[in-house]
Length: 259
Image 1 (cartoon, helix red, strand yellow):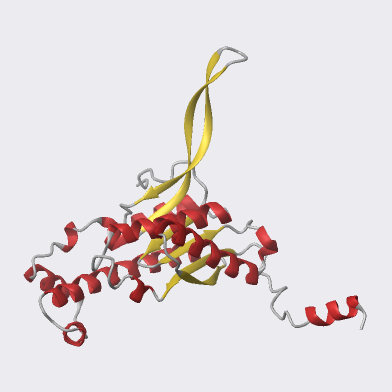
Image 2 (cartoon, one colour):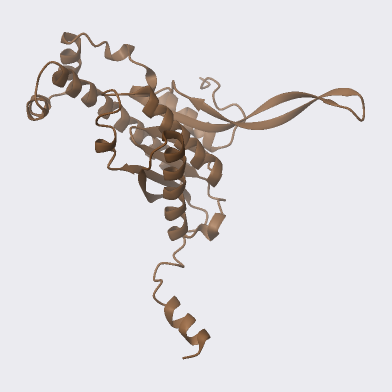
């Protein structure tokens, strides 16, 4: 068999190689840690550990920088990276985006932690800016729900309950009952660090950098770009307003929402 014929026949087996994302759609890549419940079991504080949050924030930053995203959001062991409609890397090929994003996340986290981990990756598509803001609101609501559940679960565990007993005590309990449970165990939930309840957001910001032009002998100011890390995100309507301004590429998205 000729080499070019073999090449053509083998290529037909790559069924998803040419599957591309629709043009002009918003894209969100979400990566999740694989087996992180076991990974964090012994070496990290429960329910939250600032060291682990720093590792996930570094992972989010790596994805934002490597893939040129508009916004990254991390909570628990996941990162959501928003890519604008004009994103064109890899020809918007799905297979490439999923594999590269998972490998970037794993390599950044592994390098920072000093031990190997794995991430999986999936793609979400949005037809409008509002769709993306809805998605981000959904993930932040998930962060709040998981934070409340996690604090309640570990309050019970540290009080001597077994895993099964703690899970059973929380089964069917509403938010008010969970807040009351934490109060009885001396936990001021509303006083906890905001990143635990609301997650961490990262986006690009421009800033003025002072310098000196030696040829003209004058001081100059240039605009540069850097990643802003927000560990005290607003919630509900204010968060939606912030997310919208970031996605629209406004220079100062952290400014207060106008009345």
